[in-house]
Image (cartoon, rainbow, N blue to C red; front, side, top):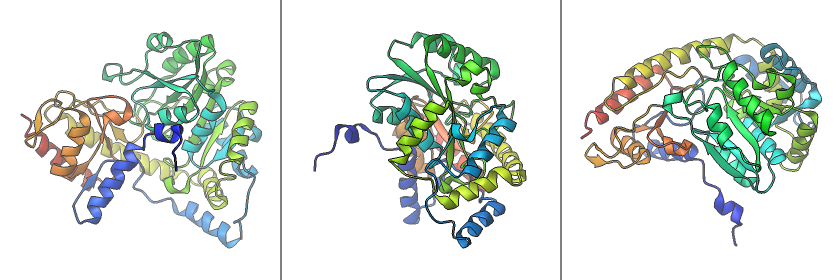
Length: 396
């Protein structure tokens, strides 16, 4: 059979590929410590699991409305109002199979064949591939360590053309953990308003902020809200990655279009997971605070250790659960006796020689970085960083 041009143009997820390689080595008995895939190592809170079990026992196992059950959409509206200052009706909300699915629906609804979509770098690995699947062209907006990995307004505006239809913003960010302030978001939003550029705001790490506060760009003004799709979900906040529930809120005509797309691709999100998500949003929130406090301890420990290593420069990320150290000074040198010409080769050396799994910055559109997740135990973090430092002490 002949594969389509689209199928051949899409790259596999580097983070999931790394996870697969890591698990293969682990299954062979190799002691690998993984800083790779980003998901909380905490279990889903018990009251959420209980709600799912109760829904099964009650026979809530049939189709639901394709856009999500009414009570969940209402709970999302309440959450957006109380947490983000955003007023939406249930008809302005679409529940999807994870926040990734929500973003994909939004890209398909807003990106035409040949449109250009602005994607700040470093970016989450799936954004460019989604744009390509919609027939659009990803246009990367550089943002380096010198600007805390945040896009500067003048750089953004310089890349807008008559074909620019959309920008995808992510705050807190995967992979850098950076968080945009209200004034920074306002400056970017004003440029989007000026040029008629729609905004997809990926806020999946909203509850994992350690300094400062989260600001939803759609809450800045009615005009900005009218051009913004806000995306969130329960995966990261409630340790529910496998449950696959995300949601989007925005102008009713765009949400309706996204709902039509979803109805022909996945039908409804899993009925049981929707009941679990409802319990997460409406139930006790103390587990979030406990997770966040533990993540902060791990972050502080990891950043300190990384900055003590030769050739490593690491900012303190205010959000998410990743560090994104700059290792550019190591590129072109030997590590463990092996020449590394880019960050991908450095990640391979660390996996094979130090037995730790990290994701190279090239996967996120920047060269000379590594992404390390601290969504694992302090014991494993300490041991993994010991291994990393030992390897980097061999740089020559």
